[in-house]
Figure 1: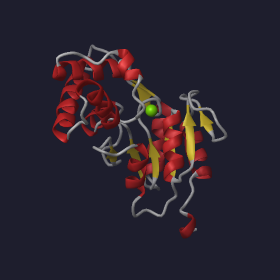
Figure 2: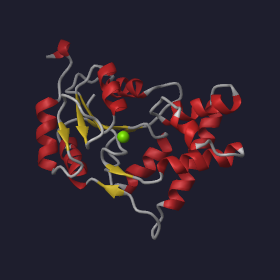
Figure 3: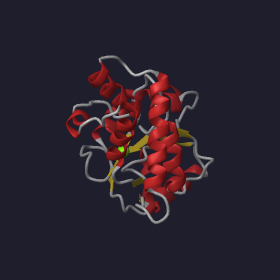
Length: 216
Ligand SMILES: [Mg+2]
């Protein structure tokens, strides 16, 4: 892989995200999952979360068609909510700029827990170059699976930028180094503020990205 970036909380924020997820499922399932039910979910990707909520509601796992319906309903709500004159996303300008600089000389991927259509929408809102590949939440894959998919066939250097403990756990499971963004993922890894300048993002990425041991 490449140098991978999570999206929400790492490159910017879209408030009310989980509210829109619950509303989208309420539209499809007749009643929205409660905040408490959402809190009981242990997964960090849309597939995992909607699958867990589906099991709580119906006692069976989610199918691909149900996931596609969720994705469509959720994207529609995000498009309405973040339309001009509505809510505005907050972009972390320096981190975004640093990612684009890195992409001029290295492989860079977006690897996010958002369903692919939602990730595409959010990436567009944040002004992310369409040439940077996006990998969103796929059926029956967790976040570390997504990181492994992104790194397939690429000797490195590898690195994952994320903002939550589940990002750190996924990076560890996939065997790649990690950089935290913000205050929600303490630890021994490097941590950048959400307001970090692009130069610092590039410097930290250059210093901490690591190639596969067999390739170095
Ligand atoms: Mg995140």
